[in-house]
Amino acid sequence: MLISEKLYLLMADNQQKPEAVMAAAGYGMNAAVLSDLMIAGRIALSDDRPARIKLIGAGPCPDPVLASPLEKLEKKEGVSLDAAVKIPSLCDVRLVTDSLAKAGVVEYGARTLLGLGKERVNILNDQIERQIRADLGAELHGKKPAGISDTTVLAILQALGIAQEVLEQEISPMSEGQAKARIAELAQDSPTADSAQRAVAQVNSIITSEPVIPPATRTK
Image (cartoon, rainbow, N blue to C red; front, side):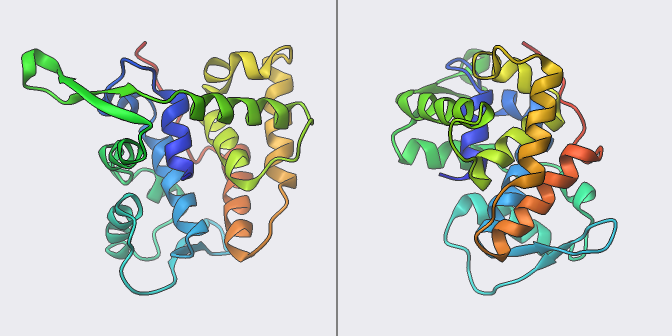
């Protein structure tokens, strides 16, 4: 499962629309899809500061969730990480929900605004989210090693300032300060298997120590 898909499921509830998630934490979704592109071997991160996005790999991208942001990045080659995170709708949340719908995790419901707005997204299979939460809770409390995907989700939620809200049960009984320190520790020490994962680990380290992702403003 893509990091952007995991993050969406954690931030959305059964009543939220795709645009509601973007309004709350669009920069986080952008950071997630950048990490997905790194794991897919399509972009990398420079070693200089500020870190910049480098395009690598070639050929068409078969996953629509990744193809859309890759096309936008191709027009902004060499953009800094913090600027890339702020590209408007870099992550197209509708493509994320399309992917989840295709997998049978969500379905589209009635349109909002008297049938003229966006379709609501309803959760069909909440077992996926429950497993994600169980894994994150075990990783936070040191009961299992944290994979690079989950570490990225935690780092983004922390950078957005909503980790305590979104993962209240999984973080308990740690305090907010303890959770923040634990997430930073995981981001700094995340094991990596290849160059793509090392790039994502670098991103995680940066976003937990520097103001790359602006905090989310929750409307709920």
